[in-house]
Image 1 (cartoon, helix red, strand yellow):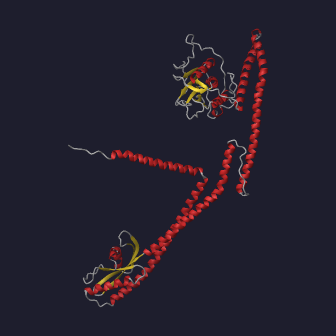
Image 2: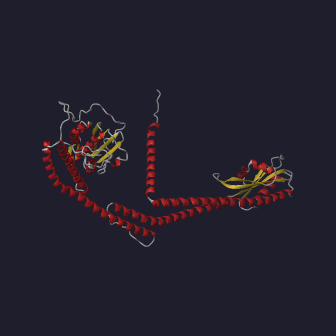
Image 3: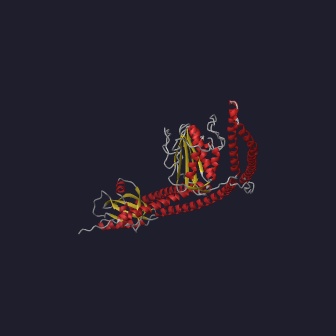
Length: 579
């Protein structure tokens, strides 16, 4: 039976990949932390930049000094050994010329004596290698004689050929140490010499440059220690200088942050009379001026709010009297001539609008004064929106618009103030119907685990992108020449935005010319929850304006048409806003 051993590499690969991913993630976290520190700290940037520049300068200077020192030591030593080798070769040739050796043993002894004598005659560590010339064929002399047998192979074939051509030749080499594990730099100098009876030999002097290498290493080590010390001193100096410079800036930023948080009495400490003290004094003067201006503006704002509130309240009494008189006149208008009857109708309509304006001004004044409160309770948002849709149906019928709704199948219970949410939805729908120009107005409700969203979209004239930024401003109108036929006060969307903020939610707008507009109200399901996302997009992706010929209603939505008569139900007149 054939047995197969399991693949031991398979189970280990995922583990290795996990380890690699963890290491990469750790490195990325470190890089991000370093980047945040670099961006957030001026002192760190100055200190690191100073150290980097200092290290670079020390490195360049050290490299230049090391190269110049190395070349100087090498050139001086080579010049010395060339002169010394020339004299030594002359002595060797003189010794050979005066020798009376005739036999092989005598010639070998002569070579050994010369090698031993010259290896200790020079300066520093010098060895002698005598090699038989390339053209020498006599069998009386040995192939080579050397004071250190390890240096025989150091003499290269190229150097031997150069020496054979005549003159003094030299070559830098790497000399093996007795341990055989490393080498030291050296120089080999060679020149031809004639041995009696035997013929041509080549005399090589091998010089070790280990002392020069040790001096160069000592110099580099000294430069490195001095460089590190210099960079350390430079870093300390940079830290002290940046601390003295950055500390007042940090203090100014802290005071500015406290000032922005509402602590208008926050000031910087003034010490000395230098530039930083001048900066602190100027900053304090600026803070004092800003504090005085803010106080005056707050006082003026309070006076304005009180004025609006008082005027609104005071106008209630004469408005009530005028309304009573207008109702009497309007009730008897059937007996008037047409011109007077029309005047009575216009007066009644404008009194309604005036009353709505006073109500909105009072509501705005409560928001400005911080007196608006949220009467939150667990309520079904779907039911609140459905009732708002019913309330706006007569207006949609008069304007020739079709309202299309989509609601969830289940209840969406949230901590809301039903009165305020209903007012927001009515304002959004009245605004959409007014600008839909008889097209479809779509109302969607969607919820997730944290929030509920209501989106109202029309497919009318739309808005420019820069107009969206002002759509919630008080009394702002996208088209000032457009008639406000629905009787809006110009405060509906501003009040709706304040109602959304009071719930801890958001009211957002989008619009494009010819593509309509979309408003999205997002509220947290639980009071105090911070909103992060919305269950509904502000504009559905890829959705284009559609003008269906017949209304389309979701099965879960409240029917807008009476099932028996096919007519829209008659309900109370809604509150109407204006874009």
